Image 1 (cartoon, helix red, strand yellow):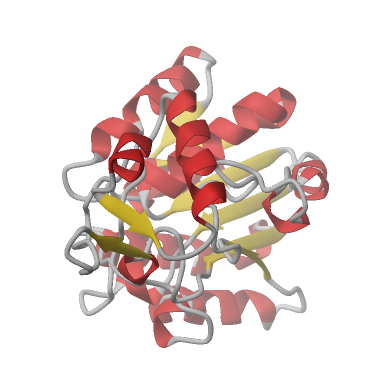
Image 2: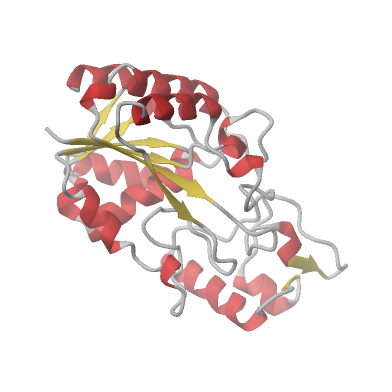
Length: 262
């Protein structure tokens, strides 16, 4: 069987305790994932590693916004379209487009817009792959195959949790549209193991996008449960997505069980 690994956002800012948006549990997740890869180099056909990557003045960062007092919002502040209309929060860039974005995001009924700490900035240490995982990926590459990186999140006017599409695609920005070529490429494999951070957001949303846009691929996916963790207090956001995956018969395994399958 042809086997691929899809590793979501296994980056310093999420996986290192000193990272800007550290996900508790990620250190151990990366240790398990790295061991899984390193011990099965000859049984893995391809590895895709996604890279969350943002400008400083991103719609999800404090510097993009100002309150009535002129001060930026604290991380983990929720901002709604009603907040903008009432003047409680003011976008410092593209205000009309931002209001439309918030309205479209809220209409989806999944996420309220949340301000994050500045994270995974272009060219920063925080945007780099986790050191432990990178060593495993280097071993994989030394077998003569190369791991592939897929960048997301670079457009400042939309969140981009899932790897395949931004939360609200921007009409004239191809990088925010559905990544059909990547879906088609992954569909060539018999099994695709899904891993990475954070379980509550980017992993869950990537999984939902596959179930929505590529149901045949979704049936090939295997969720490696102990290689991912939730953003603290926000696990409920991803729970319905994983429940739907279970209803569809998508496999959930531990790293040890995945190794036994390979």
